[in-house]
Image 1 (cartoon, one colour):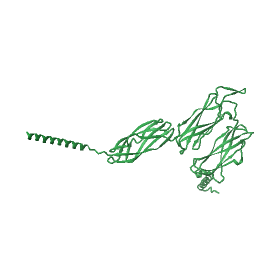
Image 2: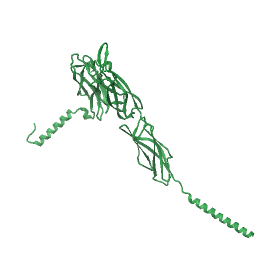
Image 3: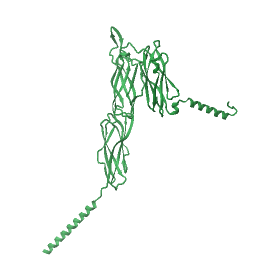
Image 4: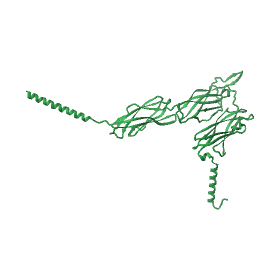
Length: 413
């Protein structure tokens, strides 16, 4: 028992007890540096239909700083949901490195006696072999995905990317406009009249490997009247090691009923080209001072902003330190000039010159080496005194020659 006659000692025991309790209750993820998080990417159909199967995609992501081992995810459904098979409850993921993720698919049956409304499912996960599970709850809407409305939602215009063309490592957005293409308020089908309102019950965007869509599935509630439209925007992250090329995003839209569901493949371009810096004058200075010129070209497919160029070479100083150009449209050419000073103006020497560029593609900052050249300092000797001396000698020679000719004439006379 604690001795209440010694308050100081008693508080030490209490603090130790609290520390031990917190340590024991901490997930292994926190202790080891891993940090797992479970999310529902999407479920289809939306809402889940009574008496039908609903497919749920569960994402497990390691947001920590150390790898997680023996990762497992477990679906624990309760009424009105049940798994298609108990054998499919647990999925072995294995190792998840920091910032890595895995997506597992589950099929749940919605009981025929289920009521329309919001229901919950539990997703459990673990990252060790000690059988310690952590759970998260998620909501799933149960109801009917079929409406009598006959409005048809279509993709209007071209998707808008910002930036227009991504580089490896870039973050940005893509926006879509979905429009109800109906032109009248009602339509007659089999002698029955229907309204032409449209619904977007759910809209999700998925990218291929290396291109991650970080925005969750859109869950719609309202209607879109004939000729009306709505905008959807999704955030995109491109991995640093994605190679240049054209990829495809998948846009899934659940409409008023399965008859009006759509799936569009959206081309998405990754292009690492940026700026080129080309010498437009000889990279030579005389007697330790001179100027050099470069043509700077934007060869990226869209505008780059905050473009600047800097030079580095051992034994040379450049002014300005950083030549700021600003915004450059595609294929735009800009000429820049640097003043160069050699640290040893009386010696012939050359050095490797590094050409660095900084720029922004959308909101993404980029910088790095774009080219390497050789710059040279040449000492030019001043020989003007020699010309003067030769001129003086010629004058003297002419004067002496004239004097000698004058004396000979006198003697002959």
